[in-house]
Length: 260
View 1 (cartoon, helix red, strand yellow):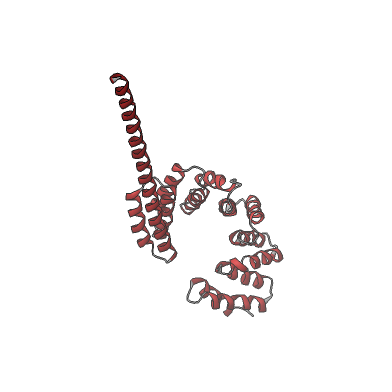
View 2 (tube, one colour):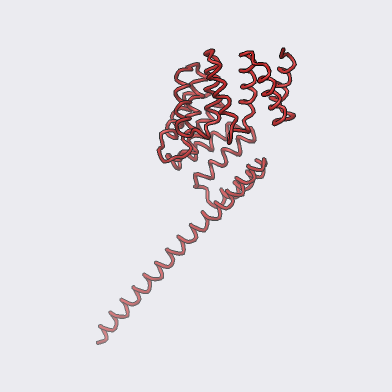
C-alpha cells in the first residue's frame, strides 16, 4: 500500500513539475513576445521621427529598440532609411544588408538595398536584390523595384532595356509609378518623341504624383523643345508656385527668361 501511495505521490510530483516547467516556458515566450512588441513600438517612434524629418531622433529610438530586440528585420530596414537621411550611405547599406540577411524575402528591404547600391554607383550589385523585390507577386510595391531596375539600365545607357523595366512598373501600378513615368518620358525625349514624352511627364505630375517637382520641370522643357512656349511658360510657373525657394524653381525661372 505504501509503495502504491509513494508511486502516486511521485507521479503527482512529476506532473506538477511538468506544469511548472510548462508555465516557465510560456512565461519565457511571453517575455520574448513582450520584448519584440516593445522593440516594434520603438521602431514606430523612429519611423515617425523620419516622417517628421528628424533622422537623429529616429536613430535614437532605433538604437533603443536594438537594445531590446536586435534581430528584427524591420529594425535594420528603418536604420538603413535613417542613415540614408543622415547622408551616411555606407552605414545605410550595411543596415539594409542586415535586414535582408535576417529575412531574405523582405521585399521592401531588398528594394531599399538596391536603391542604396544605385546611389553608391554599384549597379551590378543592385540588380539581385531589386530582382527579388520585383518578382515578389505578393508585394503591392513591386513597381518600385521595377522602376529602380529601369534606373540601373538607364544609367548604364541601355535605354531599350530601361524602357521595358519602366513599362513593367507602370503595368504593376499605373496610378503610383510616378518615377517610372518620368524616366520613360526622359527616354522618349532622348529618342526625339516629344509627344510621348509630354504624355508621360503629365502622368508623372497627376494625382499621387503631384509633388514630383522634376516631372513638372521636364514637362516645361519638353513643351519648350516642341516650341509650345505658352504651355512651357505655364509649366515653369507651376514649378515656381508649387516648389518655391528650391533649386528646380530657380531652374524653371531661368528658363522662362529665355522663352520667346
